[in-house]
Amino acid sequence: MSNSEKLHVAFISMGASALLAGSKLFAAMFTGSLGILSEAIHSVIDFGATIVTYLALRVSDRPADDEHHYGHAKVESVAALVETALLFLTTGWVAWEAIRRLLGEETHTVEVTWWAVAIIAGSIIIDFNRARALKRVAEKTSSEALEADALHFSSDMWSSVVVLLGLGAVWLGLPAADSIAALVVSVFIAHAGWQLGARTMNTLLDAAPAGATEIVRDLVNDVHGVLALKSIRLRPAGATMFTSIVVEVARTMPIDDIVKTKNAITAAVQERFPNADITVTANPVALDSETVFQKVMLIASRRNLAIHHLNAQQIDGRLAISFDLEVDGSMPLGEAHDKATDLEDAIRNELGSDAEVESHIEPQPDRMLQGHDAPAGLTAEVSAALLALAAAHPRLSDVHSIRLRHNEEGLFLHYHCRCSPDDTVEQIHDEIDRVEAGLKDRFQDIRRVIAHAEPLGAENHAL
Image 1 (spheres, rainbow, N blue to C red):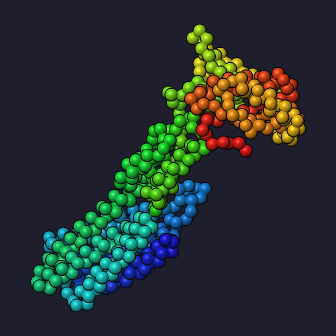
Image 2: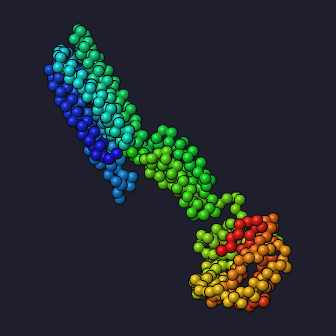
């Protein structure tokens, strides 16, 4: 709903307040009724409050800027606070004047006229309808200022009913009923002021909406990937509930998965609280279950460094780590050594200063290789050698999809084979390495052999 509808209903309410204030003042002057006068003063204050509300609404929906990072919605709360103060001032004056009349310190003759009764009856009808209209728009827009007005005018309606009853009692010969009605009106006003003030102070003090914290906590804890919920901060401002959530996730979780977890938290909270402005912070933490290999790979990944052939050994109770570090082949050795030293130091800081850490620096491919299929004769010769070597290793069977390519670095051989699904990766990799060694001994131009092992019975992945 646009701000124009809020302004429209506030403007109509302002006009109604002006009409009621003028008519009640006129009736109070000619009847001498304290009850009507209290209602008149109440309506005058209402008129001032509706002006404040209207002006506040014109400001509250302005977007956030460099000085007001959370927007301007709390202007409505300030307007509601001003209205609260006016309600209590009205209560004090009405109660004081009523008590003075009841104690005989001041005497007034109340003249009940039909048009005075009509004015009060008309105000009841007007307050009933505008309170409903204001409450409807306030609920749709979460406007504190309009909600304050709706509550205010609802209490006005009931206080007018009391004044009307008081006038009836005066007409029946009970003059004190007018002052008693005024006291009852002051109670209505004080009650409305207390409710409004409590809600307004909660907003100004950033109190979370009732029950919202527990709901958000349950929603966050149900999201996959969240290890712990560290904090929730809810800050209502007008129609918006600013929501700050801090969670812990495994530091080994890929960045893409962390983003998905944060998005899942946002979606879950947004579904329950559509007007929430949500910020999610995910702090990565170490798990007790992390292996040495996970820790080393994580440290390298954070530095955007590629490593392979990672080995970890226990040498007489001392941890020894070794790996191959890939760097740009054109990088000067001094710069490459600095990168390796920084990585090694970081690994020691993580695993312990007594850990032995060594790296082997090797060039990383930095360009797309241009190649072509090898001649048919050479491909047939290499394929025959591959089949013969594979036949000597019983774990390898059904060698297929053999492709031999030639590029500026040499020959690249690709093939698929099938193995028992019960064999371990280590067993199969060992036999594939032996086949590769045999091929390289026979064909000196073979630079790489890429073997894709498939379990028997699996779908053929050949291209």
